[in-house]
Length: 223
Image 1 (cartoon, rainbow, N blue to C red):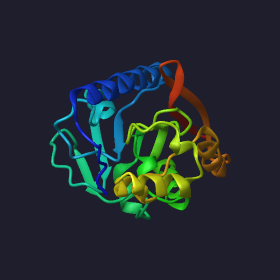
Image 2 (cartoon, helix red, strand yellow; image 1 turned 90 degrees about the horizontal axis):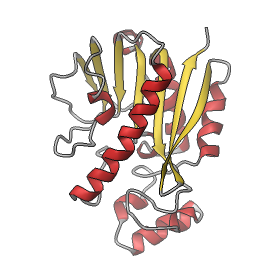
Image 3 (tube, rainbow, N blue to C red; image 1 turned 45 degrees about the vertical axis):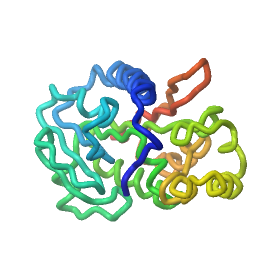
Image 4 (cartoon, rainbow, N blue to C red; image 1 turned 90 degrees about the vertical axis):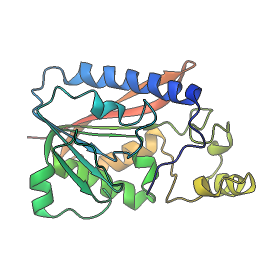
């Protein structure tokens, strides 16, 4: 699964970069008391052209060990360990042992893994890989602008109608659930609450033009 943007114009990359900088500040503020020895990035992109790509993990360079799980081929020597595998697939015990990390982060990935069941499996896997803290960031479905297509409001319609309209607009890629399945706060909380016996978490927000544009989950495994 490649995560595509409609274009890579500098303006759009700058918007993404600003939002991801805010997410990074929020994450660092909330984990500053934790001793992080290793970090796992879930959903790393192979894109190296845009400054916003892999922004969160690139700003944990001070961490001793960085790892990556992605269904794209990641060749950067920035990572000590990489595996090309979808985060929606079952992990082996050996993979969990190798890739488990103090901090597990995923930015702008969960909306691209497909069905609700796939999203649930992604969260399950992230929890299994978390030694201390996990972070999940995703666009808020109920921001007026949909950030992959930049078409306003139609993503508030029932998903079947939204996808039909995307096809009519010539955006067949984003019309497929396997490529784009947006989440609201309620959707995300309902998924996370399946694991409330294993985790504690808080929901944070980033705003764009005064409206909540991104949902950020910062969670911990229960002891």
